[in-house]
Image (tube, rainbow, N blue to C red; front, side):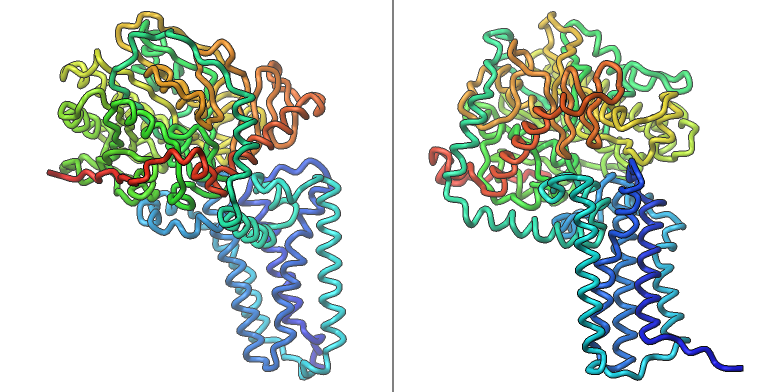
Amino acid sequence: MNRFNWPKHSVLVIAVVATWLTTYFGYLTSFNLSIDNMIQQLILFINPLSFLLLVYGVALFIKTAKRRNAFLITVSVMTSVVMFANAVFYRFFSDFITIPTLFQTNNFGDLSSSVMANIHGADIFFFTDVIIVALAVKFIPQPTETVRQFKMGRRLYFIATAALFMVNLGLAEAERPQLLTRSFDRELLVKNIGTYNYHIYDLIIQSKSHAQRVLADGSELSEVENYIHANHKQPSVDMFEDAKGRNIITISLESLQSFVINEEMDGHVITPFLNELTKDKDTFYFDNFYHQTGLGKTSDAEFIVENSIYPRNGSAVFFTHSGNTFDSMSEKLADNGYFTNVMHANNRSFWNRDIMYKALKTEKFYDVESYDIGEGQAVNWGMKDIPYFEQSVQMMKDMPQPFSSRMLTLTNHHPFDLDDEDMLIPPYTSNSKTLNKYFQTARYLDESIKVFFDELKENGLYDNSIIVMYGDHYGISENHNKAMSMYLDKEITPFDNAELQKVPFFIHIPGNGKGKVMHELAGQMDIRPTVLNLAGIDAKEDLQFGSDLFSKEHEDFVIFRDGRFVTDKYVYAHEVCYDASTGEPTDSELCAPYIERASKELEYSDSIINGDLLRFKDDQKDPKGQQPEIKGKE
């Protein structure tokens, strides 16, 4: 019986095909990529191939079989790691890894519980190609033809690779015009040019953004200023005279989405205290309010609140641009007599906060070292919210007044673990452990806010304070749509996913008596101008994209960091224009003017950050560069 003769470079072909198919099936099983037609499915199928042909093709230049085999196995391992890492990241963020997130190593220790919760046993599948390549290397004879003899074949190989890439890009551009100008939509890029090519593209974009600061000379600022001032909305005048001069307490409600407010889970009220607050005569509750964060999540929300500027796409400004000049709300309040501080019972370096708060001119940072965390007072991410609020109020008693305290809660954070004694309601029952536990931690967060209000009253701080509370970002990502469909008793569409980005927003002014539910369409970008106006501080000349929520001129238009947007008439999501009243797709031309404006506004915001343009603004920043104190135990 004749022995089978393997064609030349069989191992190379097997390596390419194995990784190609592993990648494609990884797309289908681990990522929620919406595919609308057969052309898009074809693009998704072929998009890994040109990169794999290119990178594996380097083996054609390696002379010895031993080194060639080692190279092929190394490439298969690296591509598998890339896909595995993106899958785990996607389950938590519903997004793909970017270059800056890889350098956020200070966060890795704190993120470990969330990472482990998103690793599945089936993820071993991503390394199937490594096993196949290793077996091919072991059992298939290597070609005896020298590298020099294969010179013509190599040339044809790489010409075909380039041609395939151009076909892929041509199909993608035909299906999605101006594809490569939409760097904010990473899912769109992955669907069309592939995960591996996307990472190369991301590297180019990040390099370009760093070059922007070096090349900026201030001339770019004029165009941005003209746009912002042309869209300035006149704030409400003397609407809240009794709010001026009070302490301002701004609370970030970790991962809290609006779908739990005034709702029940299996007969259990989820947020009883916040529900009552929506009806309180001293509370303005905004039920049409959206988060506008990106991958920076809580830190992005902080950045927005302080600056009313969009966060960066694909990274956290707290890491990538902590050396920038900012015109923060903290600095503005400090200039008007407020003692500004942040209270957060976590490591000072997490999300680079110790550095970023200096850039924001925050006067003091009460980090984890400021708190006494006793036995049973910590879970998962750090100090539990109830003891955190109790101890924070005691510190507030010693602060000079008026003060502005930004507070960040922790307990309602993925993976939403709680100690048994803190479970005030039972878990939900669905196919998602994440959603099942989420209702319990949301209930605990609600209870902690009740405790906080009581502590303020008992310690004489309540009547002279304004309490602003906002949900910082989503807690339940699109990866849990099946469970959400079960809870909401409806199929979750891209329109619904956009609607689920609503987060609670409260402004509580004790003794005001004018409170009501506000239906204005609004977003986190509006917090800074609203708070400053409540404090009686003029911010007309500030470069901010939001506007006072009590202004008669306030516009019903909210732009998401990923390019989606919501207006009073339309919702734009996954490149589909929806009728806001029906949730059904409508004529895409109706969204066209808003698409253009959203892109322009995101571009202007990026230019402010990437070019560090505020350093050129009137040379009005403090030349002494005073740094805030990092407050620890005394």
